[in-house]
Length: 109
Image (cartoon, rainbow, N blue to C red):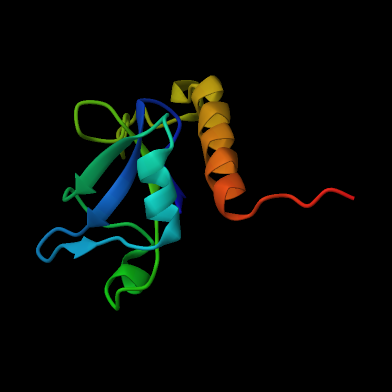
């Protein structure tokens, strides 16, 4: 899951939930722990689209950018395309590509 990546520092979630906390697990999380470029966060502010999968302990991972512990411009009037740092969206794409490349190496030929 890729969520709110228009500005801020890139994080990978180690879990999510407000009242109940659901740890993330699986090969994507293991790969994220080994790959430089993102910081781990136990996300307690809200939940992601991965919650229905994290709850029954399925393998999930969320990438999110945070500033001061929250997504920049999150549901504020400043939450507009002008607030997006497109180079950070591209950096997130590159990180996600490297992450997937560790699990799904491309075959040549």
